[in-house]
Length: 548
Image (cartoon, rainbow, N blue to C red; front, top):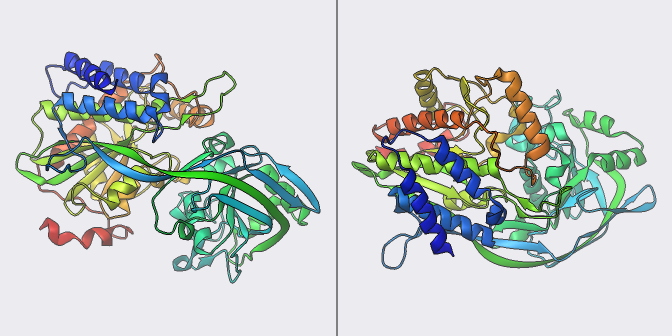
């Protein structure tokens, strides 16, 4: 079946090839999005038949464009179309048994309603916590370079920490964390990491929609299966229990402790905050089974005509959330049409344009990564096991959920990072009467939530391109309404499906802009870098000799 699928995708693409390489096509983009988000692909989750179908489709598409396989090296020296991403998969055998002891009462917690606990990835087949104290640690942040620590001298080893989402100054606190613009300290992933470093038995992040930037329904999806990279000592990286707490449960706990949630949060925003024993305890029992899977990054390459050892990477994630419990309509499939069949369609069209145009002096790599929804794992794996040297990777241009509601007068990137790659984008956009607008919602921490971040962490200049927020039809007001509705109703929900009402002309304009940026980089000797003061610049500068 995979051969048939690959052949079918090749035939479709060949039939639709236009006369002009840069004649980006609404029809082709629409066909790829509609196909990849079809129920037949089963939500494209890693390690499932849906991923196998997705990999076959992408491999066939890349081959039909004239790209070469760019993945793992085979024994004969040739390359595969894929890079194996070896992951540990932990699956809950049944719903966890959860009780909170609040004010002397033992209260049952409903999984994904009161608490949302992930299947453990600390290496244990059984997790059992009995009467473990809950300690409120404010935002769960230890940042000595900012003269801030929520833990003070509190020993939280063997306890369950309860932390607020986002940063200490998100709502006007005394910290130096960028105000509404989230730092990595605000991400739930950081809070999990800090809990593990301190030997906590567990960590529960209190959910609020505004500081989290998404509703509880997003939290309540997919907790029965957790993926992680294979680690020598997983317990050192993960507490036994990791998850979220609904704000209504948090309010109940704080009230029983003689205060209110709002009062406790206000204290956590001050530098003199002291951790607080909540007087509540947790009982939890979780049974899991673990196995290893090879998720897939799909990789095509167009070798450079003059400097093939220098690479520009186009990235985007091909995975989504797979199959889950039925929603109110009975739908079980998380189709991921916007997130991120759109970005993969964009990548395929970009590959077609460059292949038909003869490529560039530098090599172009089209990297469709897997397991993004599980924590950027495909991108992290590539960054740790690069197929092409990171030192001579010119730049990474990531595309994650571009716009489908028509052309914009502007463009943006995720987060507020400053780097030469953005300067080049601004220059090329101005030639097309588009301007740069800063991330309209920096509090969402989008810079840390897409695949380019894994490359930034190892110093490679990387951006995640965004379509902009000033629609030609309706301006910023209409764009804001569309964005808010998607976040509230469709993000990580079964309703993220293809629609005939979309206007993909904006996606075509985005492709024209990114093509110009990549063509400029591909035919030049420019090496964009991070701006002075960036936390990533020193990492890039350390490998400068490789680019001389």
